[in-house]
Length: 345
Image 1 (cartoon, helix red, strand yellow):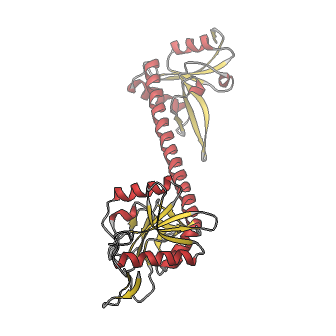
Image 2 (cartoon, helix red, strand yellow):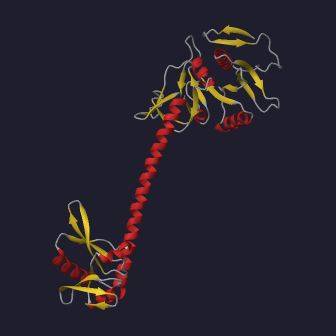
Image 3 (tube, one colour):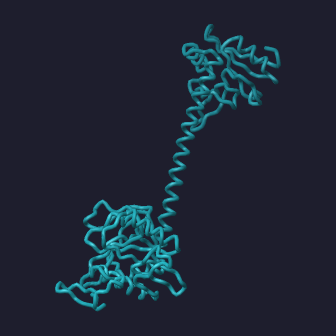
């Protein structure tokens, strides 16, 4: 082949003689030129670069196969002809299966849809100026997210990829890609290992915050369900209706103070409803209304019942002397009793 310049000023290679055996026969000048630029960039990184290098079994043929002195292989694919995303993925998988990394390149005016599915770079078209990357290389900041990096030359991009200073990354939305795509870019792009680690750490923190918030919400909802179930059991066990409870509550507040209030039924207090009194920003348990069981708390905390039958039940449950207040809605009395095991006095 010979290097030539077209009448439009496009640098390209041309066959000296057409040969059916030449693997480059039939390729466009733009494709040949892009392959040459990719090979030159790989050699600038200190790697060997071979055009049209193929696997021994013919499973793949690389436009440019870059090989490091240590034997690491990366295929640099100049893909200017039409191709489907499925085909690109299949070819990428064939490279991966043989331990060959790959990056795809295109220099047409608009990036192809498949480019966001595989490690790729969209380049400026060949001209007298140095080729640069149109997209997508990005940097990350927690405050702004992913932002596209401009004015990276093709040579530098290839060197950074070969040196693993750039790595493919897909978990993010890149802003500021180009004027033709103001909504940004979502797909596989290139970034530094530092930015990739920072983004992953930020994502882990975000997910941890979301998980913690979900856990708090679930705990709150579980608490609501448990409280509702406790109330249902309390009303079913005591047989108290709204009117009776309202009268009972009025008597208790009148005797114990307007700054008192009943809490939800609590297993800690034998499924009874604790009566609290406000103490600044806190509340103190003064008594427990209508418990189903007595615990060690009954040694120091009074019980409130609503009738004489409730008083007898406390005597049957008592294992020590227990102070019991009788707040009877029928007679509207509030009286103090003591009960011991099996007795009222």
